[in-house]
Length: 109
Image 1 (cartoon, rainbow, N blue to C red):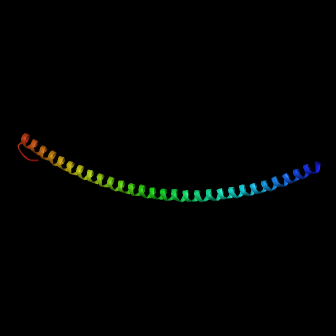
Image 2 (image 1 turned 30 degrees about the horizontal axis):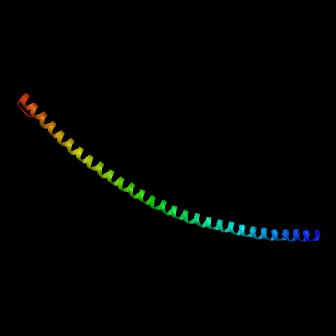
Image 3 (image 1 turned 90 degrees about the vertical axis):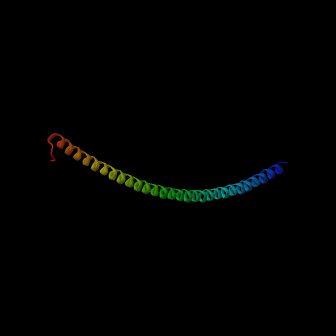
């Protein structure tokens, strides 16, 4: 009986050792597979995010250029309008001054 027990113990130990080796090998293979999948996923995610960032940068650059152009046109038009208003006001004031001078002194300057 003692011999049977020892043999059973030895067989059980060998079985568990083999089973543990197999499970360890499976776990290591799974771990490597997960690491590879994770690297591939991160690589793809990085590529996608980089492409998105490039597209967004291009959009922002175009938006900035359009905004800059629109601002330049607005300021140029505003300056042109104000210059015309200033010229008209200058001419009006000059005419008013002459009319006032004529009304006071009866002659042009």
